[in-house]
Structures are given as C-alpha cells and as structure tokens.
Amino acid sequence: MSNRSYQYLDPDLDQRNAAQHTLLVQANANSFSFAVTDGTKLLLLSDDLSLDEMNRVSGDDDLLFRNYGRRIIGLSNTGFTLMPAAIFNPQKVADLARFLHVKETEKVFSQPLDAENQVVFKVCGSLTEKIEANFDLEDIVFGAKGWIKAIAGNEPSPSNLYLNISGNKVEILNFGGGKLRFHNSFEFMNEDELAYFTTVAAGDLQISADTVTLYLSGNVEANDRNFGRLRKFFSRVDLNSIKPLRLPNQFASHPSLKLTALALCGSSAAY
View 1 (tube, rainbow, N blue to C red):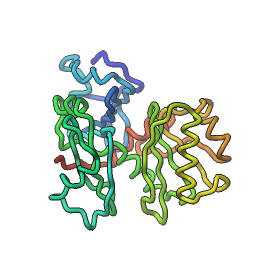
View 2 (tube, one colour):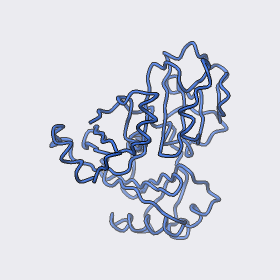
View 3 (spheres, helix red, strand yellow):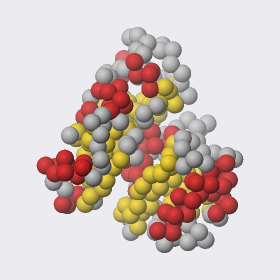
View 4 (cartoon, rainbow, N blue to C red):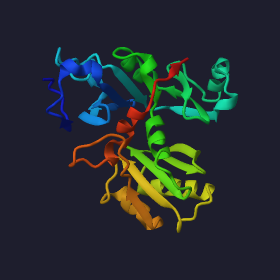
C-alpha cells in the first residue's frame, strides 16, 4: 500500500476496482487534498498534502494515481467573474478574461456554475502545470463549484451566510429565492478582518446581524479564534453539517465539505 498519510482509509477499498470509483482532488498553489468515493460512500481521505506530492509517485500501489473511472479536480482561483448563462458566448472568453488581468503564467477556464451562471476563472500557472503533469485539463472544475451546489441543494435561507475558510482566505456565499445571490472571496490577516469582511458582506446584502445565521466550513472549529470572533458580532454561528457523501461516524462534515462536495460536479471546458 502507498506510504502516503490518510485521515481515513476504508478496509474495503480494492485498487483493482479503481475504474468503478471517483477521485476528488481539491488543490491550491501550496497544497492539496484528495478523496476516493464509491457512489456516495467515502473510501479514502487524505488532507493537506504538499503540492510537491504531485511529483512523488510511490509506486504501482499509489492510490492517488490510479486509473479511476472519473476524476474531478477542483482548483483554487486567482480571480473569477460570473455572468448570466443566457448571454454567455464561448467565443468571447478571451474578452472576458481581460477583466481578470490575466498574467502570462496564468491559465483561464470557463464552465457553467449552475443553470443561471457561467464562471470564467484564472488559475496560477505553477498549479496548472502540476495538474497537467498528472491529470487531464478536462477534469478541472471551479474549486467552489461543488460547495455552492451542495448548499444550493439544501434549501438555503436568504438570511444565511455560508463561509468556507482555507488558511487566510474566506469564501462567502448567499442565496435568495433559491438562486445564487452573492459569492466572493477575501484574504484576511486575523480574526478581526474575517469578522469585518463578513459584516460588510451581510451589510451589502441588507441582512442584519440579528437575523443572519453563519454556517462555517473548512479550517475552522467551534473553539478557535475565528469562530469565537464571529460569535462576538453574530448571535447565530454554527459549523456546516451538510454531507454530500456518507462519512464514517467519527468524521465531522465541515472540514472536508469543499472537497467531498466535488462529487456533485461534472467537468469543465478549458480555454
């Protein structure tokens, strides 16, 4: 068996059945996590690996580089824009990319985000190089796509804000009338800045601190500084309990929600 570290490894996982399984990968410029699923069942979870691990194939038994029947690779972006799907023209992607100030080292992707919106996003060149060396570009999806889809499928209230925290980056999401109303990301230096950006987002959406409920996922726990600071400003703060996959009983869903929600995605088109 591969010598990679695993937070979870199902004893029933059989490498010979890889063609029947799905590989999920969530990656940013420094690290990545991956999971293997059989339908809605989690078989493997490996979290917070160095991106250099992409270059280290452990051998024929490496569980990251098997011939899985399906691969879904969610990538962190360095900028994105949304536009109504009804007026999106794929021949105009290059024009849209100009608004993202794309660098020579960045690659641009476009794909449907949901039935209403098309997302155009750019990805760090060093990250795409790592992915291209091991996977197909057609397997890449907008990193937040699964997370957005998972929340959309759970009847989100207009008074709810959904936060996913990854290191010093927070993504904030809101729905209204069952449709995506707000999605943006911010880099914060400390818990005060996190509370500030969340307060600004709630204010722009005209949701008062007395009525809003925050649901947190990612690198956050109920006893950490970020959670505690948000509780100073908002009376209702909770960890997100949505489960896109069937998890072992000992696993909370919120730390790996963005990764496991990739199971709800298809593939994208690259430009």
